[in-house]
Length: 437
Image (cartoon, rainbow, N blue to C red; front, side, top):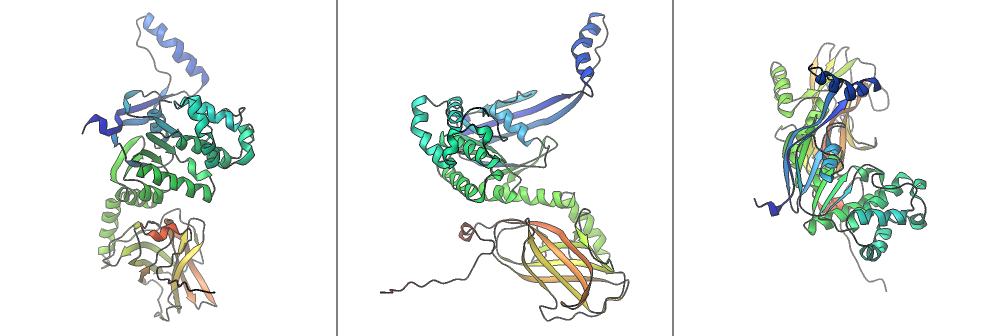
């Protein structure tokens, strides 16, 4: 591939920090090794090395939108700062081709004593625009930021949302070749986030290059051609965003890789004649109830029994979980909810709603519960499967166990319905327009 087709090239990048236990050790490191060499001794090291990045290599082609995901502390911000020239790599090389505009951590590149207007001119000048160019674009920047008369106030008086509005407005309006965004959009309100997403789409249509760091993996799948998963400063996986996000989610939820989870659980469950690839309930799950019956394994499946952590649109699915009864359950009442990250119950069902009575479960018995249904079109995002095991009726029952977050998954549909900013999408709807006068 020609170097002219590459917007960003990272080669064997590494960044090491020196960690000192006390300020005294820092002073010793500055003085003692020189004296030790002077007297012919081997110099002693008074610090510990911390490698924020280790041997990272990748390329981003012009016109690509690439997402970077990973836990806090995995090296995402470090790599963006290295690309922008804010940090100097310890080893390796960073090459960029084109004007870079970056929206990094809140406050970077802004002077809190300056007004919004003064910061716009300062930042745009640092990005290479002339005074005349900034004059011509200032109204567009102010309109995009939409902070009204606060543009003339010192930014130290701004809220975090106003701050990020102005920073993003400058970053996108200077017409960069490469746009780098580091999780800053989560600060803005929903209207501003929608505006930013439209700007992203506009940039993609103009064949601009975007490097995007976010904990919103649904945004990464929706916006990005590729994704890079960083873990402990190294690339753990790189490829099609949907595939990378699905494996990352399986690892984050169950503390193990996708294949490892399958192997570990399948062997255990085959002994019980179970054809499903169930996984353990997370150890940090939110669980309440009397404890007379417990759920020890769960899975979210396609209709052909493939366990998934990412659903890309309406499909026939199954929620399967295994219940161990410690006491006799005379009138089993089991159900599930799909809950979003704000705690809202989106959909759900139970055997009483379905008109299906279950046989008594004796103490010591283990049963497999399987709910099969057509998953509807809902808002893209992160969701949890909540499970309940009770004894009784919907009106009166003993709650043996309720798990609010038994299984986590992503819903990410490319349907045009996603442009409707509502939680639940109407798949079947008609409209009629007739003359009224």
